[in-house]
Length: 84
Image (cartoon, rainbow, N blue to C red; front, side, top):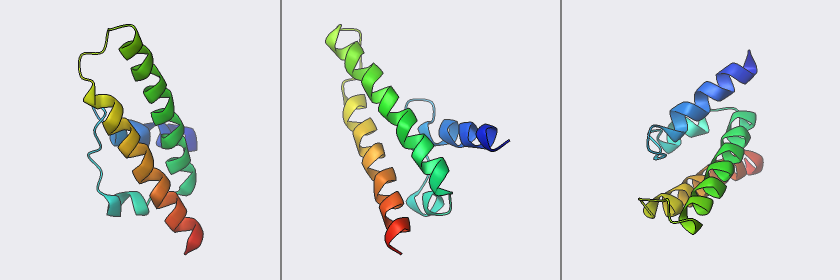
């Protein structure tokens, strides 16, 4: 059941276009394992987006930067949890 909740969280976090709809305060309430799972999924997405860009299939190039920012935001929240 934890896997299902984690998958649901990742779908909520990533959203339809890959932009985060969750606020940082909401992310801080999440479990560290859920955040780690979201980071892994976003890294896979980043890899896919980069591949699409290299093969000229990517229509919105800003998706790369936005995905990197979301990864950084998640890693920041994870770091905060470790040092508090």
